[in-house]
Length: 166
Image (cartoon, rainbow, N blue to C red; front, side):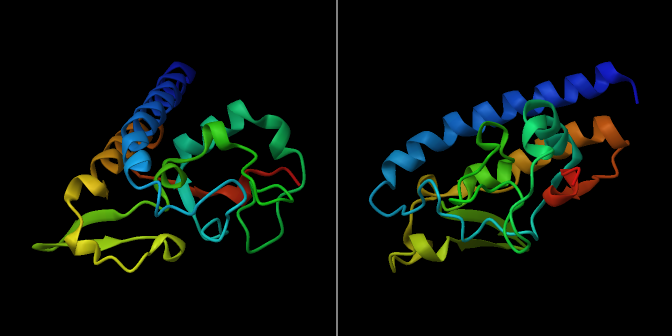
């Protein structure tokens, strides 16, 4: 693959991440009283998460020093430090940028909703206005399009732990 196509794909993901952060900020402010996720809250940061290769490439480029260190212990996201904080926070993948918020997505003819158990205050999620939820789908499609620049549409995903050289 041509390096300039890789550079364009990574730059696109950086812009997309910034856009997601801007879009999710008002949601975070609106739900501040119910969101308990804070620095060091890492119960959802597990080894079983995978990211598109293009997001992994962004981490490789922005945080090479982290990838030569020891990963977090197995079972936890490899990117966590000893206090449970993300060592690649500024380049964290999309899934990490929206985790914890009420999520909504289309499923079949209907809609599903979910939220991190730590942020579940007992409110019926179906009663929330759709603007009080992060909608899954549109950003994932844009990430898949960026990934297609790297792998001709294969949608290759990688485990974050596999980025470490140790």
